[in-house]
Every structure is written in C-alpha cells, then in structure tokens.
Length: 380
Image (tube, rainbow, N blue to C red; front, side):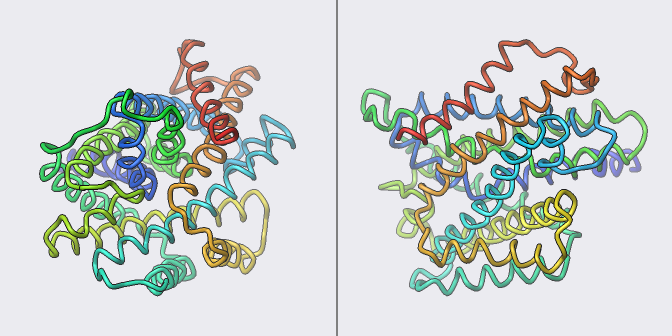
C-alpha cells in the first residue's frame, strides 16, 4: 500500500489543502446572485472565474519555482514589479486577507443561527473570533489533515443539499433579471475561487517530496481549483431548489426548510469550514508580515487578531457587499498583479515550468475578467 500512501501524501493532501483554502465564505453568496442575475449568466461567470484562477494559480506557481529567493506575494511583486507593484500587492494581499477574515466573522453568525435559531446579539461571532484567535496564538500549524477532513465534511453536506434540492431548482433566465444585476455574480465568483494564498505552501510541499514534481504540481493545482467550482454548481442548484426565497448568505433561508438535525449538521460543518479558512488566511497573513516586512511577532499577532474583529465591531456586517468588494477590488487586483508578475518573469528569461505554451488570447481573457470585475465594483 506504499503507492497509495505516496499518492495521498504527494497529491491528495495538497489538493485538499488548496480546496480547503478556496472553499471558504464566498461560495455562500453564489446562490443569491445566481437567482438575481439568471442561470446562463451566473454559470458563465463561474466558468470564466474558474478558468481565470486556474491560469493565475499556475502562473504564480511558475514565478515561485523560477525565483531563486524566497518571498510571499508582496515580495515577489517587489522583485518583478518594483515598489509600485509591491504597494499594490500589499493593498491586495494584506487588506484582502483582513477583509476575508472579517467576512468569515460575519458569516459565522448565520451558521450559529442554524445550530441555535434564537442566537443573536453577536455572541456567536465573539466565540468564533476567540477560538480562531486562540488557534493563531498557539501556532497550531499542523492543520493540514484537519482541513482535509473538514473539506470532506463540507463536500458531504453539499451533496446532501444538492440531492434534496436540485430537482426543485428553478433558475431565472436573463430576460427575467434586471440589467442592474448583469454583473452581480462576477465579483462573488472571483472571491469564491481565489486560492493564491495557498499556492506557495503547496508548491514547496510538492517539490520537497523529491523526484519529478512538475506534473504532480500541475495536477494538484488543476484539480484543487476545478473541484470547488463543480461543487459550487451543485450547491447553487441545491440551495435554490430548497429555499422559498434565497437569502444573500444562502443558509438563513434554510432554517424553515430542513430537519433540525440536518440544520445543526450544516451549521457545525459550516463553522468548522469557516474556522479552517480563518486560521489558514491568518497564518498566511502572519507569514507575509514576517517574511516580507520583518514585523515583530507581537505586532503581527495584533494585526491579524485585532483588525478583522475591529472592522466587524465598526458595523461592517453586510455579507454580500463585503464579498463583492473583496472579490471585485482586492482579489481582482491580486489576479492582475499575478499575471503581470508572470509576464515580467518570462520577459526576464524565466523558464515557465507549468505553462510552457500559453496562448496570448488566454492571457487576455484572464486579464479582461479581473478588469471587468474591478470596473463593475467601481461603477456599480
């Protein structure tokens, strides 16, 4: 069974880690925006975002593999894009991470209500924040296997929701939706599919296993990006089929539709998924602040633990608005910077290990996708 252990350690574990990073809070916004914009348009944006992030994830891995020095995202931007690119990367990666952690806090309230429908007052958010912060303070980094188990659990829940609701799903056509919602799904789709924060760890993990690593790494990134998108499609259909009226966070509309035991299961696994993503993003942000900025440990902890909760306490509780802003502005900017870095990397003679032949039209489509999301949020 040594070959099975090898496949698990070399591929299944890093695939699970990438999926665990991607499957966070964002995909809970997708059923609502799909119900508002129309099926064809919603799934088109989901496909466009998936292809774009698959290319961007491979591009960033190319940059990591081909750069002799070790950095995180702002550091690589500094190497290839200079101080201006580094400043934009700081905006995208650091503020994007802080906002993502805030979104996890906001959504934790919705999952808390699935477990205890009378919950309220922000107590469940404070408990979630306290547990996540404690994990970060204790430096509990050995979470890879836990994340894989949690990811398996959320896949099971998505399967149950899909099985119960997919037969009753009725998605509006584009003609039924307002032109004001024509770009609504793009930013949430981008936020739901981004996994750049895990690419460095996955790349180093696969390479350190020894032997030929190019094909396994490409396969890990490809499957780790595509599988979440397929799961999202089933989840969207299931939620719309189950909900009399789809709520912006997807789960609030299920309270009167599902058996209490199933609601509790969804709530527990949802909170565990959020906790896993919250901690993963927090660790990545601490690494950025340490590796690229040399900040002392106490200051890194203060930023990572304090600022997201401070944003929440300041009254930023609108889930869909936060997801759209994070996806359309910060993650779209991050995607554009990753493409720009890869192009500069190639222009300097860097060897593309994972994307040796990439048509310019594909690069153009990827850039256009992120620019379109940025423009929609800017003018909407």
